[in-house]
Image: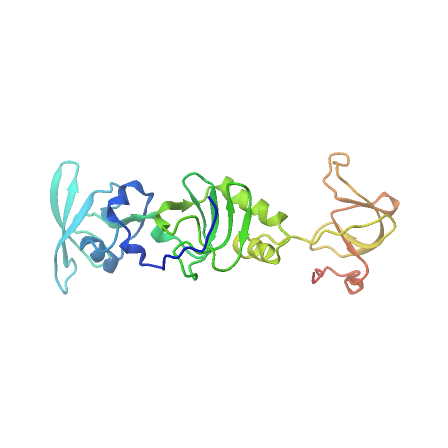
Length: 266
């Protein structure tokens, strides 16, 4: 499966076929009276449930005021009982209400999603024209798609779930390898990953070095990049006189950083 700019226009998430609700991943969210009313009236996919036991609850009567203005019917393991509930979902018989809704209704901008087969992984763009508009996606062939106007394989958001950690890492790895400027932007924006520039040093290049990000920069001459552990230590660079360092940047263009703990602008 790939990605395409589907011709289907954006629609209300809550108008999706309610017959599919049992096939979807469900999640529990805090009680909200207005949403609960919509669920109770069949206007929104979901179920009103009691906290912990997930007993199904139906509202049968509302009053405008009082401590417990909502009369509900609770379907327990031992039969049906009634209880009065407050506007925030607390019952007079110690029940507390929650809402069980399809997982897709909780998706937010920037969430990483995947389909059931894991062959379409994407970053959701809720500001786009389609329900499954995306910032970037990875298909089953390992091809990265970045661009405006794209949506996921189908324009049915209920077919998607939160990506697993393995799926998220696949997308991260492809974004890291991409030369697209937006790939670096999305790594930082959606994953908190800021790639440090990689320099092509040559022996005897003048460089600034330090051990940690909060230490001062020192001037040195580059010798080699360490690709194996040096006596079990994880240093990355060897410079003049056999000194070992974790951080190494060109001296040229960064002269003002010498003997400071400031970070380079680029």
